[in-house]
Length: 91
Image (cartoon, rainbow, N blue to C red; front, side, top):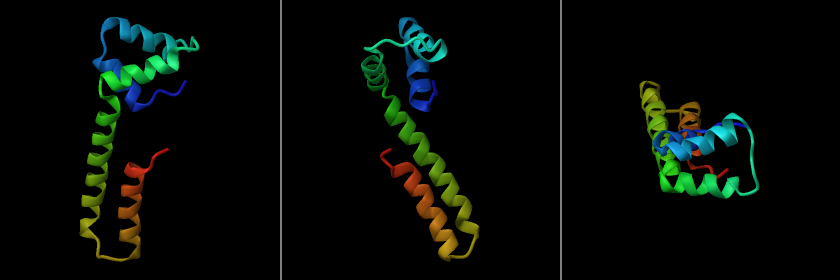
C-alpha cells in the first residue's frame, strides 16, 4: 500500500485505463495475482524508474552543493558519501 515515486510517475504519465489500474491496486488496495507484472510493465513503459533516478541524482547534487560551504573533513565527506549511497543503493 506504499505509494512510491515510480508509481506516481507511471500514474501521471499513464492513460486513463492505466490510472484506473493504479487507483484500484494502490488506492483501493484491491490487488490480483497479475498486478505486480502489470505494475512493472507500466513503470517500464513510462520510464518511471529512470525518472526517479534522475530526480534522486538531482536531489543528491543539491545536497552535496549545500555542503560546499563547509571545510573538508570526515563529517563532510561522510555526508557526501551518504548522498551518493542513497542514489546508488540497489534495494
